[in-house]
Length: 429
Ligand SMILES: Nc1ncnc2c1ncn2[C@@H]1O[C@H](COP(=O)(O)OP(=O)(O)OP(=O)(O)O)[C@@H](O)[C@H]1O
Ligand SMILES: [Mg+2]
Image 1 (tube, rainbow, N blue to C red):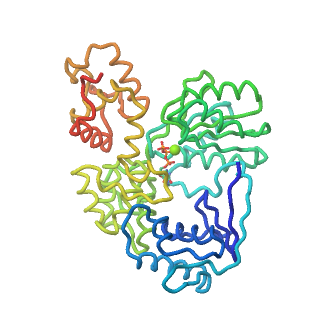
Image 2: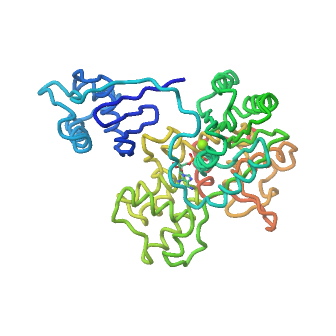
Image 3: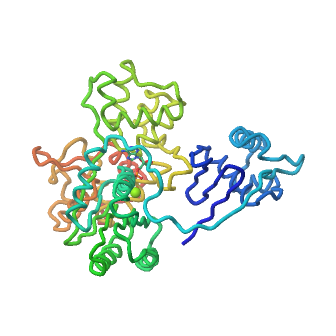
């Protein structure tokens, strides 16, 4: 596997990682500005017509030409005014000398993992598990932060494993052959292999994992997945949502909780004057609770705060999850909207499990299985389905309660929308 790097002036553009560096320093560009730059750089100084740029960067959309001008002037601010030349009436061309090179995909985790909030204990626990077990899977709901945590685990182990750490993203693998092909490029000396996003191919991943562990006695495997592999040697690390304060905390205290810290950081990234204080912390805590402390949901909500305010975003959740849909282009497509992420997870369930989940959504608060009515209770398959739903974090179980089951707030909103759309019915089970 190789990937292209373009070097022009003091800059290096890595299209596969969507990164722009200047002398090793990361430069953050808006997604569209990055795309415009990518097209110009890939032509290496040859004129690119305006129409071509518009069609490539905004495929299928009707976009005013001045949008393009806005991005070009942003790029000039970042790269220097003379970096991009305007050919009047026609288009633009890169004015810096440019060369491309092919590099091997670096072994190990994607570089410099982003800051992780509220995961100090989880990180240490995972490292501990990996010291004692050869196969650790980080299991949890979509968007809870499995991949993010695994990046930090891999980064921490990079040195002790002599850099022989390999990262394989299986998000796009659909078949056992895809998994085999992805693993074929793992080098024999690899000490830590991370298999990220194995959800859709958990059976094939399990088979390959067994084979690899038997073949390479010094190898450790770290897997992130919504569906555990079910192997005997597997140590499962269940990743819970970020901690949310119980309420009534002053801002300085509340900001010590992962969910609130993440919310503050992501809003401030969009609006640098934003600050959680004692005046708005109550609303922020309610929002975190309403979003179950789920990092992906918090990020999507934060992106809407500059336009709708904390209160506005919180209120919008009464009508469903529609506002949680403004994810960045840097995110994988399923993470650009909460309902896409939940759809991905829901798609991993069998029809009977989907139907049961939707039936549970109409029971408010905590419930017992016998409240589900005669349509589902009493079937032996019911227990298997409940087992799966709890295992995959769709349903929360608390044995200390007389009614021990509940759904997360976001999960209930999603399942109710599914019910309304008639996508699942009890008959489907
Ligand atoms: N503790 C955290 N601190 C900061 N950002 C986080 C944290 N956890 C998750 N995120 C952010 O939330 C988003 C979702 O995280 P991530 O991709 O790790 O979830 P995941 O559990 O792997 O989801 P999936 O099951 O869909 O693959 C990402 O944008 C990530 O950067
Ligand atoms: Mg992931």
